[in-house]
Length: 345
Image 1 (tube, rainbow, N blue to C red):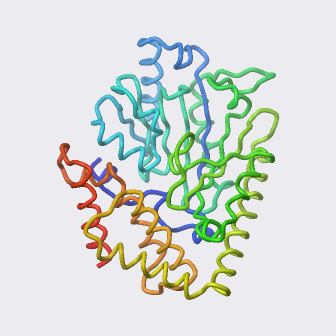
Image 2: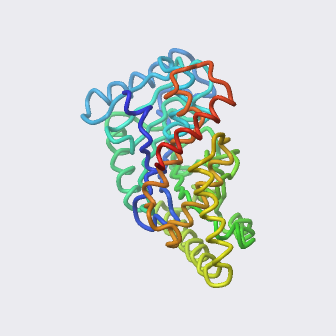
Image 3: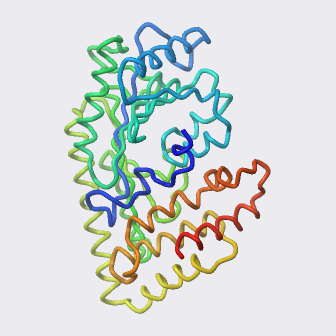
């Protein structure tokens, strides 16, 4: 349990996987509800507990899965789970009495219980791996459905609280690092994705801000399309973005190399020697250092080493390892700088 909260390793911050120079992480999410019980927006305490019991039984029946009751976790522990993308900010709200979380041993499978829907099944992998994750999520979905009836309609497919999830309930997401498009003023390309059924979100999904040049690209619609079509389209869009980001990097290296080198090395220097770092500044600096490593400007660091910093600078994680619930923002910023300096040393 301690490793789950104190480890800096998570799929989105490992720096591994296919096309890891641009893609941090892939995710497949399925929205599901159990037919016998009202959906969470209309749920009673009794029906919510029934859903929790179903997933507790699932963990007891299938080796390699464990159940966590969010009501037994501290607000700080729930915040770290949000920072690791294992639960959503919405799932972390409240006392968590009738909310749960199912994890596999590697924390690459996360099932939010009684969030917006009864189940939000999530499978993660570092780098680009949408099809591999879909195969994994599909098998897990079948495993749960083998003993339980899902809410399903012949015309509309899987029934969900939000109409945008009707159909197959599938959301594919790719978290991308796009610093060169940002530096060269080409991020306007992201504004066009809505015209082709895609949506762009920030670091923590819907409603969150894009900081550190990190963007989540996801499909918008789930009704009337097959899972294969959705993921094929999403993969194609992300491949185009990867090409454009790499082209922007090549352009900067060819036409503005000295300026780019200066920005990347200055960012590393600040991370290495700063006494005080806000979360926003740290993420911006990490972005530049990661870019410098990816294009060969900074040769003594690896993508894995730099990407680990993403978790190290998160507010909840820092407060947890400080073992001080009363730590204020200034103290946290001092600790952030200290932790980053020691890590890079």
